Length: 139
Image (cartoon, rainbow, N blue to C red; front, side, top):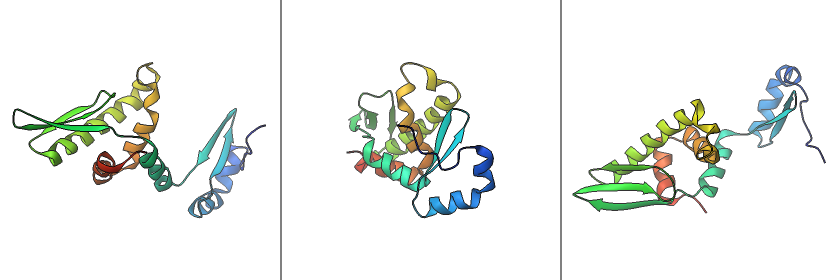
């Protein structure tokens, strides 16, 4: 069974861009074909909310030498701050830097290739939304 493609070519989608975006605004996912690839146009906030609910942050906080350490269990992200807010703010910054590096060079590395969802969540979130994800996100 093949995927139903709403717009089989990029040219077709471009000619109907208003319809693509109007459908998207109504919550409809639109597909666009280009060569052998099919892409989905999805409302960014819906995608962010999905990742917020399904990607577990697994953040653990601990105190060490008067500082707060924030680390993500089973992930290579650690930050620190004078207090919880500082540590979580620094963790958000660390994830933003990682997302940039991931897009530039890490996405094809075997030990980083599975981080796509975290990168998308980071790119689609404000710092406040990331701090909320650290506290309440995931399954």
